[in-house]
Amino acid sequence: MTDLFSKFDPLIQQRETLLSTGITDPFSLVMEEVKSPTVAVCNGRETILLGTYNYMGMTFDEDVIAAGQNALTNFGAGTTGSRVLNGTFQGHKECEDALKEFYGMDHAMVFSTGYQANLGIISTIAGKGDYVILDIDSHASIYDGCAMGNAEIVPFRHNDVEALEKRLKRLPADAGKLVVLEGVYSMLGDIAPLKEMIRVSKEAGAMVLVDEAHSMGFIGPNGRGVAEEQGVLDDCDFIIGTFSKSVGTVGGFCVSNHPKFEVMRLVCRPYVFTASLPPAVVACSAASIRKLMHNGNKRAHLWENSKTLHKGLIDLGFTLGTETPQSAIIAVIMPDLERGAMMWEALLHEGLYVNLARPPATPAGMTLLRCSLCAEHSADQVTEILAMFEAAGKKIGII
Image 1 (cartoon, rainbow, N blue to C red):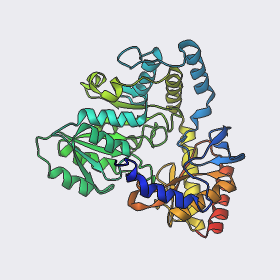
Image 2 (cartoon, rainbow, N blue to C red; image 1 turned 120 degrees about the vertical axis):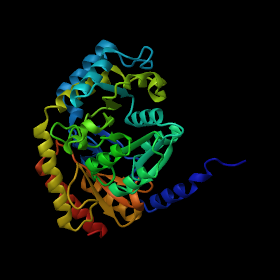
Image 3 (tube, one colour; image 1 turned 180 degrees about the vertical axis):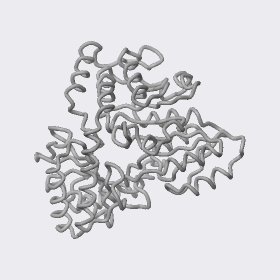
Image 4 (cartoon, helix red, strand yellow; image 1 turned 90 degrees about the horizontal axis):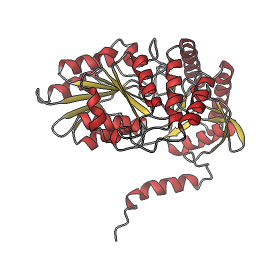
């Protein structure tokens, strides 16, 4: 009998070889206590968190927590149903209203995760006979949405406007076309040239979906993302986002001005056939979204943190994923997986948690340490982080 797990043997062997050296498993870290958006207790030690997506530090915001506690008391622990049946509570509508106000758009649809938002929207609007044109470094949820919808996938070179334009010109003029882009790419933290990409997409008669998961709340004058920053928000047919980054909870969403958008609630399978978010989660999310509208000072502080850390790591001799700071993500390129894991562990021993990212999640087969800054990191913490990187880098021989 064929062992269906045999396909994973190379990965199992790689993991066993890595752990046989005595390195802590970097993918099984347990946080025993979370003290704030930037500090947790890991392995019994107080640790600075530089590997969460808590960009705006909303997880411990007093108003957000109070909203969740109130909803938990008044509406219970869960909905036990789909949004199209008994799973739409007052809080779900209020959360969608907050999103519509935040983006200034006509329609908002909340999903139970950000992954489901991409899976549901892409698979529903682009089906057999349609084309999805996407950046080759797109998130797994985007690729999975394409596969589920059975559309023809047309990838193009990362952030290459000319390559996108060439792909579009080769497609049948009368075919349904959806161009899927991301504002900030999650591994290297680089931003997309959305203005140029949306222009060539519209010229080719394509609809445009932009995933702003890693830019919502932070980038743009009002925190609406890279599309707002580049002045093309109104040219986007769909904006996808998540609550698990700047909003500080869990869930996903799509906002749109398309006049027929509401039909998605009846035809989008990952929306129709899954339980809706618990009342406390949507209440926390709505409160957080409304506060993000007025967080200009926190956005400015996060930019300062990003610039300071980026320059400091360059000055220490590390190789980074971008030449300049472009987002709250700073990727530190490692020579290989083994030394990347050793560096990750050395940083943990120093009292710093970052993400170890490896292929196939990373582009071009890279191993990297991904640092995700938070608006709640103090200037002193950023200085401390740089000292930890210097000590660990010298210990492992990376610098």
